[in-house]
Image (cartoon, rainbow, N blue to C red; front, side, top):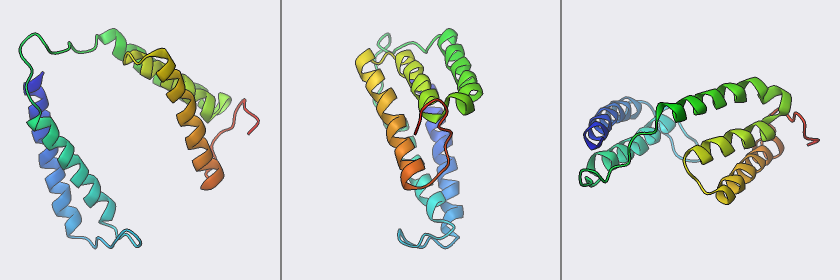
Length: 145
Protein backbone atom coordinates (compact mmCIF):
# COMPACT_ATOMS: atom_id res chain seq x y z
CA UNK A 1 0.00 0.00 0.00
CA UNK A 2 2.77 2.44 0.92
CA UNK A 3 4.60 1.74 -2.33
CA UNK A 4 1.47 2.41 -4.38
CA UNK A 5 0.87 5.61 -2.39
CA UNK A 6 4.38 6.80 -3.16
CA UNK A 7 3.95 6.07 -6.87
CA UNK A 8 0.64 7.89 -7.04
CA UNK A 9 2.13 10.75 -5.02
CA UNK A 10 4.98 10.99 -7.54
CA UNK A 11 2.62 11.01 -10.51
CA UNK A 12 0.43 13.65 -8.88
CA UNK A 13 3.49 15.73 -8.01
CA UNK A 14 4.68 15.62 -11.63
CA UNK A 15 1.21 16.67 -12.79
CA UNK A 16 1.10 19.48 -10.22
CA UNK A 17 4.49 20.78 -11.33
CA UNK A 18 3.37 20.78 -14.96
CA UNK A 19 0.23 22.74 -14.05
CA UNK A 20 2.27 25.18 -11.94
CA UNK A 21 4.56 25.76 -14.91
CA UNK A 22 1.64 26.25 -17.31
CA UNK A 23 -0.31 28.49 -14.95
CA UNK A 24 2.74 30.64 -14.18
CA UNK A 25 2.90 31.54 -17.87
CA UNK A 26 -0.53 33.18 -17.57
CA UNK A 27 -1.25 36.35 -15.60
CA UNK A 28 -1.80 35.35 -11.96
CA UNK A 29 -3.26 38.59 -10.65
CA UNK A 30 -3.89 38.77 -6.93
CA UNK A 31 -6.54 37.69 -4.45
CA UNK A 32 -8.67 40.79 -5.03
CA UNK A 33 -8.36 40.59 -8.82
CA UNK A 34 -7.40 37.04 -9.87
CA UNK A 35 -6.09 36.45 -13.35
CA UNK A 36 -6.71 33.37 -15.50
CA UNK A 37 -3.74 31.54 -13.97
CA UNK A 38 -4.58 32.27 -10.33
CA UNK A 39 -6.76 29.27 -9.44
CA UNK A 40 -4.86 26.68 -11.51
CA UNK A 41 -1.58 27.89 -9.99
CA UNK A 42 -2.70 27.79 -6.36
CA UNK A 43 -4.68 24.58 -6.84
CA UNK A 44 -1.57 22.94 -8.27
CA UNK A 45 0.53 24.26 -5.38
CA UNK A 46 -1.92 22.63 -2.96
CA UNK A 47 -1.84 19.40 -4.98
CA UNK A 48 1.98 19.45 -4.92
CA UNK A 49 2.03 19.87 -1.13
CA UNK A 50 -0.45 17.04 -0.63
CA UNK A 51 1.53 14.86 -3.05
CA UNK A 52 4.70 15.51 -1.06
CA UNK A 53 2.89 14.56 2.12
CA UNK A 54 1.83 11.31 0.46
CA UNK A 55 5.36 10.58 -0.71
CA UNK A 56 7.09 11.50 2.55
CA UNK A 57 4.68 9.99 5.03
CA UNK A 58 6.25 7.47 7.38
CA UNK A 59 6.02 3.82 6.53
CA UNK A 60 4.14 1.49 8.82
CA UNK A 61 5.51 -1.87 9.93
CA UNK A 62 4.25 -4.86 7.97
CA UNK A 63 0.91 -6.03 9.30
CA UNK A 64 -0.06 -2.65 10.79
CA UNK A 65 -1.60 -1.31 7.60
CA UNK A 66 -5.35 -1.24 7.29
CA UNK A 67 -6.57 -3.43 4.46
CA UNK A 68 -8.24 -1.73 1.53
CA UNK A 69 -11.99 -1.34 1.75
CA UNK A 70 -13.74 -4.40 0.38
CA UNK A 71 -15.38 -4.15 -3.01
CA UNK A 72 -18.75 -4.30 -1.27
CA UNK A 73 -18.07 -0.92 0.37
CA UNK A 74 -17.10 0.62 -2.95
CA UNK A 75 -20.21 -0.81 -4.55
CA UNK A 76 -22.41 0.62 -1.80
CA UNK A 77 -20.85 4.06 -2.25
CA UNK A 78 -21.30 3.90 -6.01
CA UNK A 79 -24.92 2.82 -5.60
CA UNK A 80 -25.46 5.65 -3.10
CA UNK A 81 -24.11 8.20 -5.60
CA UNK A 82 -26.42 6.84 -8.30
CA UNK A 83 -29.43 7.08 -5.97
CA UNK A 84 -28.33 10.59 -4.97
CA UNK A 85 -28.28 11.67 -8.62
CA UNK A 86 -31.72 10.15 -9.25
CA UNK A 87 -33.50 11.69 -6.24
CA UNK A 88 -31.65 15.02 -6.12
CA UNK A 89 -34.25 17.05 -8.05
CA UNK A 90 -37.26 15.43 -6.38
CA UNK A 91 -36.28 15.48 -2.70
CA UNK A 92 -34.01 18.52 -2.96
CA UNK A 93 -30.42 19.35 -2.20
CA UNK A 94 -30.61 19.25 1.59
CA UNK A 95 -32.45 15.94 2.00
CA UNK A 96 -30.48 14.14 -0.73
CA UNK A 97 -27.15 15.39 0.60
CA UNK A 98 -28.00 14.40 4.17
CA UNK A 99 -28.67 10.85 2.96
CA UNK A 100 -25.48 10.78 0.90
CA UNK A 101 -23.32 12.03 3.76
CA UNK A 102 -24.82 9.60 6.28
CA UNK A 103 -23.95 6.65 4.04
CA UNK A 104 -20.47 7.93 3.17
CA UNK A 105 -19.55 8.80 6.76
CA UNK A 106 -20.91 5.54 8.17
CA UNK A 107 -19.11 3.58 5.44
CA UNK A 108 -15.91 5.24 6.65
CA UNK A 109 -16.69 4.04 10.17
CA UNK A 110 -17.52 7.45 11.61
CA UNK A 111 -19.39 7.34 14.94
CA UNK A 112 -23.16 7.70 14.44
CA UNK A 113 -23.51 10.94 16.42
CA UNK A 114 -20.66 12.58 14.51
CA UNK A 115 -21.90 11.25 11.16
CA UNK A 116 -25.44 12.57 11.69
CA UNK A 117 -24.17 15.90 13.02
CA UNK A 118 -21.98 16.43 9.97
CA UNK A 119 -24.61 15.04 7.60
CA UNK A 120 -27.21 17.52 8.85
CA UNK A 121 -24.98 20.55 9.45
CA UNK A 122 -23.02 20.59 6.19
CA UNK A 123 -26.00 20.51 3.78
CA UNK A 124 -27.89 23.14 5.77
CA UNK A 125 -24.86 25.45 5.93
CA UNK A 126 -23.98 25.01 2.27
CA UNK A 127 -27.62 25.46 1.20
CA UNK A 128 -27.79 28.70 3.14
CA UNK A 129 -24.46 29.86 1.73
CA UNK A 130 -25.22 29.05 -1.88
CA UNK A 131 -28.98 29.63 -2.10
CA UNK A 132 -29.48 32.51 0.31
CA UNK A 133 -26.16 34.37 0.31
CA UNK A 134 -24.90 33.77 -3.25
CA UNK A 135 -28.30 33.38 -4.90
CA UNK A 136 -27.52 30.02 -6.55
CA UNK A 137 -30.68 28.09 -7.37
CA UNK A 138 -30.61 24.71 -5.61
CA UNK A 139 -33.62 22.37 -5.66
CA UNK A 140 -35.61 22.82 -2.45
CA UNK A 141 -37.55 19.60 -3.00
CA UNK A 142 -39.57 18.43 0.01
CA UNK A 143 -38.48 21.24 2.32
CA UNK A 144 -40.35 24.55 2.40
CA UNK A 145 -37.23 26.72 2.18
